[in-house]
Amino acid sequence: MERPDFEHFIAANEYGFYCVPESFRGRKVPRLLRKGDVYEPTTLRFLARHLGDGDIVTGGAFVGDFFPALERGLAEGAQIHSFEPAPETHAAASYTIALNQLERVNLHSVAVGAEEATLHLQLARPGADEPLAAGARIVSDPGKGQTIEVPVTTLDKLVPEGRKVSILHLDVEGHEVPALSGAQRILTEHKPIVVLETGNRKRRIQYLDLLGLLAPQHKYVHTSQIEENGIFIPTA
Figure (spheres, rainbow, N blue to C red):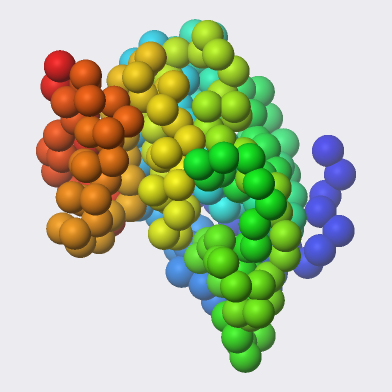
């Protein structure tokens, strides 16, 4: 794969190598990667240790900084399914895959939601020159800062039927409810461990209520917080 045509640097840590757009240099995750550190190391270890014999759905991908560690932990025949709607970041994640010679990552240039659509992705806040980087988010108002239109699909369509899913991990900057709503088949058929950015008790309750509606037979509970992420497991 050819190097990206935008300015970037290559960072490395204990798991692998990462392509990072130069415009992201001052943001949190790129700063960590540049120092050789790992973003959310405890969460990453948790995911890798609980992959079991199934696939993992994880996204947004950002620059693919979770991919090398996760592919290393996959069972034979298992795969990673991910997505990244921002074009520059998708290109960086694709090059990260190439740098590490990863062969079991399925990366899609889409956002995920409750249904197929076209929505607006905010790349920078109003009046700001610095990109949001990992904080790029879906917004309802295209006038809010620098935005682009991106295609949206559901996780149930992103992951082929018949693929066993052990973990569903979402960090989509406030778009978790629509994203989770589009994964009802995955939840009901495979009852994966669900890992969601939560941050506060209100959001944890919101996610528990939604999991109860989408997959009531599995009786999901919130077990713990790891860094900013809530861990939800099926108990039935």
